[in-house]
Amino acid sequence: MAALALVACTALLAPGSGALGSEARHAARPVDASSLKPAIVWKRIPFGTKRKRQMAAYSKRHYGERTWELTDPHVVVEHYTDGPSFSSAWNTFAANSLHLGEMPGVCSHFIVDTDGTIYQLVNMGIRCRHAIGMNWTAIGIEMVGTSDGQILNRRPQLRAALALTLWLLAKFGIEVRNVIGHAETLMSPYHRELYPSWQCLTHSDWQHADMRIFRRKLKRMATQAGVPIGPRPQWVDSNC
Image 1 (cartoon, rainbow, N blue to C red):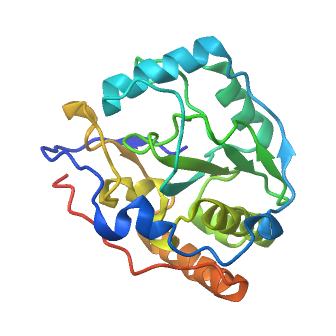
Image 2: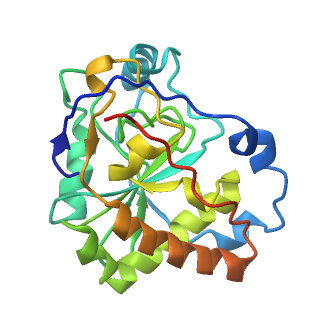
């Protein structure tokens, strides 16, 4: 992950209703999601009872709800590892080390390696700490690399990341507009953070301009596969 940036903020955002609601999102699913599932290699990180308790306590502090479970996810957050290899990212996530003074440590549900191999680290029914303000409702995808542009020009990895994201859209009824880069989290209507000092914390990975390219490619794939795209993005002003 890229370095944290902190700016002043007073607004606390909460998810909207209407078109963003679960009922509207799940109104039409004409595609069998299993037919779109890419090859995935399991490489589990330790996430036992202790870490689940830590995640539940984290969720209570930051989202007002004591649970480690991820149910009905609304968002996919794209990241890059800011490191050279899959193993370095996996080791970081497996270590469960203190981060920003709190436990559990950071993690992500998936890592896409430079050769396009997709690894799953955590069951999607578990909350991973990968994006402040979003972990209550977001699946995290990490791509091994040090910049957006590097990954956009690495075809096997980009194809795999797009295929994985497309499958998640079909599986959970997530709309393309809710596939965001980590740097876009403050613009999402699903951003929620109870700590005033954390309400404007974000990362610099996957900037808005590069995510527009990613989403355009994803839309083309979704159209070809018959996966509903949904309406245009509804970005919010975070006052950050």
